[in-house]
Image 1: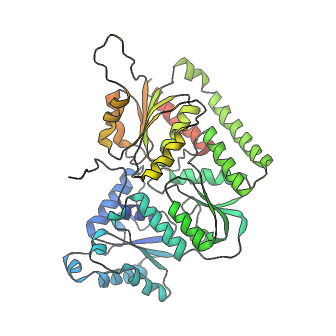
Image 2 (image 1 turned 30 degrees about the horizontal axis):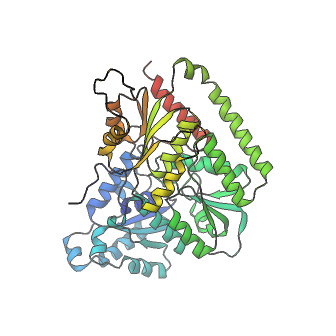
Image 3 (image 1 turned 180 degrees about the vertical axis):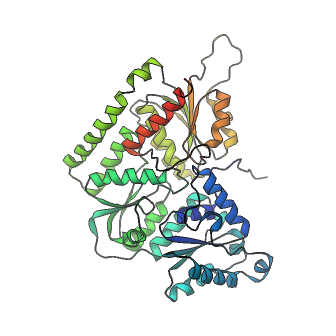
Length: 446
């Protein structure tokens, strides 16, 4: 009997595609699937991403074919054509994107041909096959990007040396994606570059359509958006680099120096940006020195998150907060090669900390992994307690934190116990917000 995942921390590929499209400006997702798919996805996206809400023409108002038994028996292409026609007629959008569920792909509906007929008539309609069995939210994100890069972004032989594209921060799945993209865009802007983030504040479809003229693609991930970057390079001839999500001083300096080296930015400019940001960063942190020492706010820490957040949070708590991250649980479904690559990011911290890194998607296994690391108290005379402690994870990890008697902060998806608007944790500025949030939990009951 195969294993099942208790309380998965992501949706299926269709859910990831819908989440990506719902935050792309002026874009209307059209679901070709059974009615239950759209409803379940809407509830998971809106309620588990810091109360994101529906937005324009999304949530329960998403256009959907809502196929039923007749369509399963005789095929749903005619129903899809009807739905696309009605959506074009009734909804004000600049791009319409059809995404598919499991049933219609299992019965063999040719969704791509149906959408192509509309595109041949001049309508801005794209489609991608995003059945849930193809993977999780991250795969849906990649599929959407690959389709956009192949079929929507204009091919340009002229490259702008001062424009770059940035992705790898997965919308909605990263609950703080909007704020994080804004922070990274601002940092690269200080180096003198225009940045297309596609899903950030103030972005338009024109930015996406003209992205083929960029000189470099920056993928802020070791695992998400990599295949899309390869497609972009193949179609548009733009090279890419991968850099980890930066949180805090050390991580953000590495991010800036890596990007600057790829763009051949003058060292004096890079140094000036880093020095200015660090001066501001440490000026604020200095204010915490008294309370940090007087209240003894150092902690053991357990971190639970995807491959983007796990390494970034571990580096931050170890090198910036001076905490002891003993256990890190990475919740993605990754190949052996990807796991090896991600695990390599947990060495070389300035503090010398080397946490135990575990790859497991199942929220129910947290206590087992912790007990393997830290033996239980069996009433022995002397016991080195895992205390005081703190758990940084998702809303699913509150129960585990309670068992440890530790405070908890939800950072990784799902986040259903916080409201998130423009908050960011990336960069220097984001690390200040994260420090505020973590330490506010500790002093909140005083």
